[in-house]
Length: 193
Image (cartoon, rainbow, N blue to C red; front, side, top):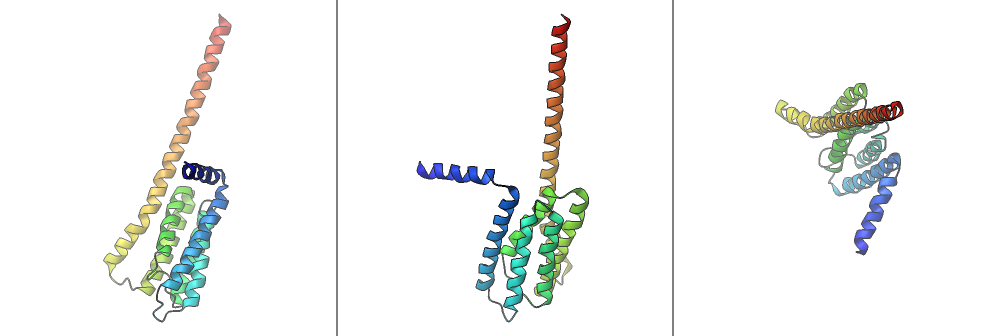
């Protein structure tokens, strides 16, 4: 029983947490995981320092994933692409960078306004794609097709969930309005009698 109560307490604390602070904690966890992974992946002669700095900076973009998804996209994509030019190996054999990109793309779809969505998604895809092409060599066009498909799905899922949440909010507002109008009509009928 004690572990279940402890989980409930932790769950309640997380639910009560400010979303921006939760995103900062998430970004910090990704930074730590990325640093550990960067040291554990063989560099094969690539620049470890450049990769490490880029990993730290890129993962910090997750802190703004809900507050400003476009800023998060730029903070993630620019160091990801630049480290590849500077002979880093951030996207070649790492998993944390891929998971961060998937989470960021979902967050962009879920939290970005329409215009910012159409700017932020290509920024992340272009930055990650450029880094992969430089590091791994995505020379063949079918690889790029699958890359686009894989990276587009989280953004589209986030967008679908955003639209569903907006629809539910509108339906809830309409239901409340109808209930108020019904109560007002019932009150006026009682007053007329």
